[in-house]
Length: 174
Image (cartoon, rainbow, N blue to C red; front, side, top):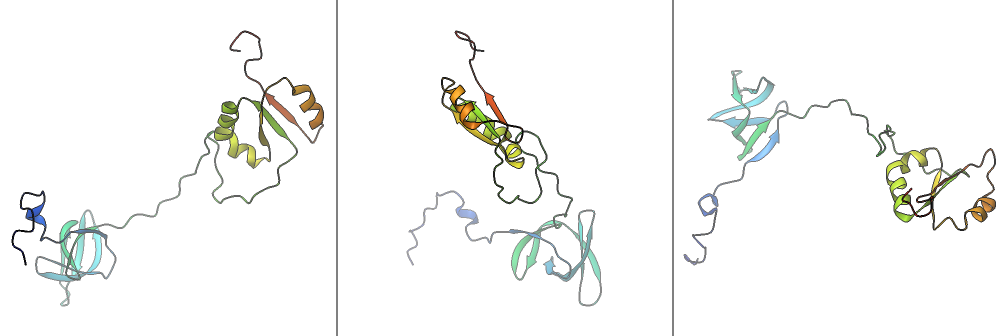
């Protein structure tokens, strides 16, 4: 072994020989050691883990580092609580369904949006809500061909059409 192969000035050389402490959630009947007291976990409360040794003696120790589990250093913590799931929301603020929805056939209704960025924004914010009701957002390159597009689409009571146009008034930003 080369005595001079390691860099003594490298950070952390003082702790290189120490074992890393793992963060571990406690479980009932887990056998751990703390200050020469070996016992099984019989409970926990108010930041204290209760250990019972083989003779039936129970002692409490604070959560945290200092425990050994199968000879390895661990920091014990209480198990994570299983709380009620918070409802998920879509980007528009609507409640999202808990289970993913199956793919649906789009209804014949459409929303034509002038401008690529506007169409992407509509899809990003309201896309999940619109897909839920079967409406498709389509990009409209410009409004020059709008009458032909509306005529070709042929809106009727079960086949709705919406159009979102930006900069409709000439020479303005409206």
